[in-house]
Amino acid sequence: MFRPMLRNQVVVDVLIALFAGGVFAVLSVGGVDQVVILAAIGGFVVALALRRSAPGLALALAWLTAVFQMVTAQRGNLFDIMIAGVMYTTSAYGGRKTRVAGLVSAVLGSVVAAVYSAAQEWARQVDYGSSQADAWDQTLKTLLAYLVIVLAVLLLPWLGGVVARARRAAGMSREAQLLAERDAARADRAVAIEQERVRIARDMHDIVAHSLAVVIAQADGARYALRADPSLADEALGTIGSTARRALGDVRELLGALRHEQGTAPTPDVDDIEQLVGQMREVGLDVQVEREGDPSALPTTTQLAVYRIVQESLTNAYKHGARGAPVRARLTYRPDTVEIAVVNRRAEDDRAGPGTGHGLVGMRERATMSGGSMTAGPRGDDFAVEVRMPAQPATGQMPRATIPSTDQERSTR
Image (cartoon, rainbow, N blue to C red):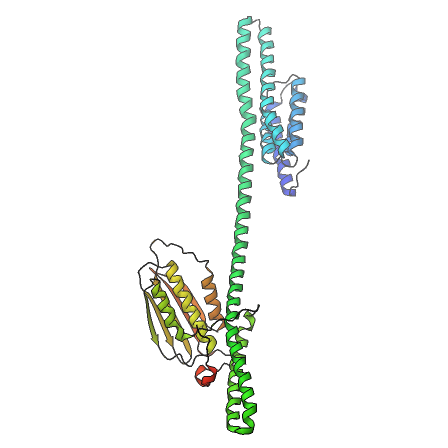
């Protein structure tokens, strides 16, 4: 019966009802009927104070007060307008039954008030000695006038409550939708990060598996060469040490990303960028590549990161860039840093390709895990991706140039 409300809301409702009752008491009381008038005002004040906390109970009290007015033969008065506040809350805050009761009360109350006022007008015309025709004419006019006025006073607030309830529900729905979209965005980001970590783990699988295979082969060879030629054994042990250090660096750099066991896959490096560019040109992307420096001394994971970042940048340019516009890729290999810059012209209609937006997340994670940084975004009419990462991550990796050729075997594509 009672809705949960804050204490200050209850206090405000009570104060408003008391203020309205006081004003109407001053304006309405002034005669022998002042006691019954004050009783009617009191009934409407209580109903008005309960309008939000108990809409159904407030409606019942309003009906009882209205019946009391008719029983005591009171005429319509200004304080009857307080019923409008009760009608509003029946539809704005009441349950389904209370809303229906409010609508029925608006229609039925209008009819009852019109008939009651018409009956009083008929009695007054008879007392004045008016003819029957004049009496009926005045009574009919009173009936229609009261029906329209009371129906407007009761029905319009009820309709206003319905509108307020609908707007409140729409606001809650929008808020719930925003929360759902926010949760979905967080979930998408989490999935994107997990997918990228799985891809990194799959790439690392080839590197570590290959390194361990070399270590095992060199260890077996050193065991037999130790008896025949100690110098060969020393060379094999050197290869084992360099390979193990490189594998340890790979594990330290990517261990945080390794979550699930993945199947084997070729490990691309910077030399494969030329083949990647050729593939993108075959699908219609005009790629212009500029290179500066020598990448042969880069560790395996750095070369892999460079390849993946260039691959994703070109893919984004193909999906989202302007058709036919050239894509400029610049790779700068310095002794201490590697810089990647890929710039493409944005589509004029800002069309979105079929991507999911996870590519930028993956590139940024690769750059960050290598100790570098990445910026990506519009630049005038172009879209630019710029990455800067250290050439030698602080992981104990050995550059490829210092590893014997037996350790440079790669899977055939």
